[in-house]
Image (cartoon, rainbow, N blue to C red; front, side):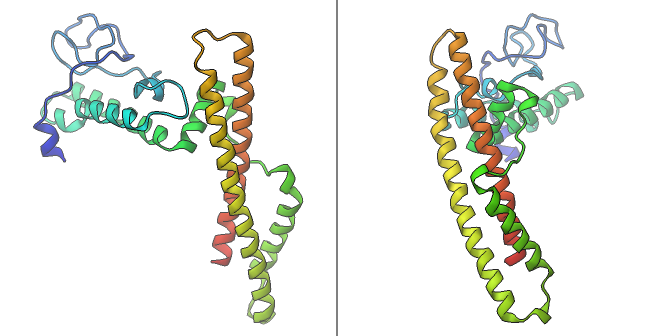
Length: 242
């Protein structure tokens, strides 16, 4: 990979939020170019740059995956450390920092669940971190399941194969039910993607639109919270019953 990359020239500059308004090397003005127009030195991306802007996509959830991937590879050809192996330490450090941000952005946006979680944090702030919570309509069933799981873990060979087998079968059936519920959460989440994207179309955000956005963010947060809780229970069941 490194030989192929170093044989390719950097891509032409594209406007993108940078860390500085002047080139760190020649002090020329920078207007969003990630390569200085005068000395062609690579410039550091802004640490405040969000992943959607980094990959040149609107802040929507049904992204154009092909366009995002194309942007990722375009920037990767410019920032990849292999291009800067023979450069000074400043350029090497900038290359590594830009590449780390780019990779984090691509990993996050290419996965729809991570994309939704990131959007919620971005739009609603750190107070909206996704926390696990049991689905209200499954609360009693999950309490019973957890009791059965603890009982299963405490069983020994002295309890008899029939007792162990019956409880294992019950837990496996519960696991299948929860796995179906996981898929239902995913379907509901993806439905909200379209609602969010439709609210991003107006050029001016009115108080009414902002309120609708906040409501959708809250709905997605609740879905993700319930889904994560159920996923953790499923993982516990898999670990216990095989």
